[in-house]
Image (cartoon, rainbow, N blue to C red; front, top):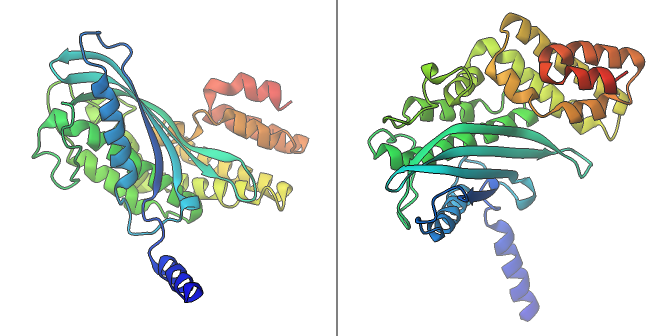
Length: 306
């Protein structure tokens, strides 16, 4: 009977939905710059609540197994407080995608958002409704709107990396948050006129059809290149160059777009590592393209891919 019960229990567990949540997020709140008159324990409470918000919320209609969850890290650095319970700072967002048949994880996102303003009172509910953001207190809802926005950006890029334009529904959700974003004095990053590199432009670029080659490039880069490195390194490098050529074509038509800079930023070490084993012709081609796409690292490409 014990064996039968154990078997039935195992079948029931197996039949239950797999780990539903999609993100394996780690939120760190750093408030070292805040005046000592503020009770620092509230930031520990905030950190716990934000971790629960990202990890316990269902972001898609798909079920993710534990090994499929997307690893991501959010570092919220609070720089100052302008008034009671209102804080300003920056958010560093990082996410990675595992590469098939390896222990290596390739960056999906590595970005710092410097337009963070929010209101928080210890133990206040951390809530988010993407269809009713504007109807709530702007300062209190801004932080969860920002985190939800980046959660959808991460999901969209992850889906894009596994299927052609697979991330479109999540980029659209991110744009929906932009369109319904809270509005108040000192809240910025959601509007086109807030700057050339912000949440508005990233979401706009990701849903704009004139940047379709970006999505093709992302899929080719990850699924047809990095994931094939183990089985056929030479073919994978050729596909990497194909992906870079797509991005170069897009860049010629739409120079200095945010989405391109968002993708290539902090990817130089990975690119160099991949192309170092290429043929002299492949290296020359890589240097030529990367020098146009990632101007900040031209010297590195020329030096390390001789």
